[in-house]
Image (cartoon, rainbow, N blue to C red; front, side):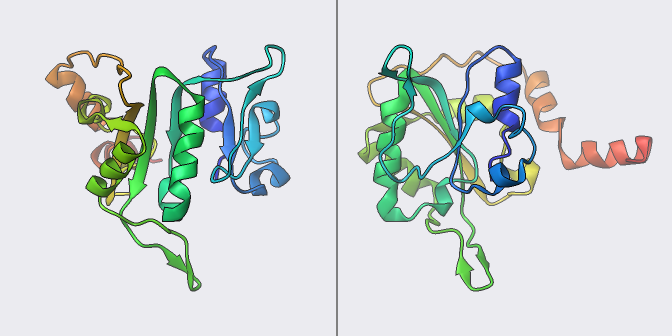
Length: 201
């Protein structure tokens, strides 16, 4: 569920962001950032056509970055095409679509929550057919600094960083080995254990 924390961080840093959530639970319960930045958070079925419009300029808003954390595996295969078109319609030239995909089945009380459980290659090929290109070098650049992944309790998941085909992604600067190790260390299990030992929390 979208609690709005990431969008709030973007806004606090001086950027513009919009969060879309398929469930209205957080909105009804006024959880996390919803009561603070409610005008930037919306409920929406992303598998149906929609538009995010700047009412003053009367034009569709384009975003430099679109993210999908813990989303794609919940989308039925037949609905992925429309979702991808919605993203394409709102992604700025040279913009990035960054996502996590889980490769685990998740069934709770007999309900299959993960509708699309496929290997990473399947996703890369699927988005290629839908007009996107995946950049593994950008996945390596972001290292372990994703919202979702092995560091955050989702070991059997992958990341994709996409642009619309023929767009040019941002150049990934060269990173030192020290920086890569630091990225791995922050939030890692060894760091969390050491923190508990030293701070008792």
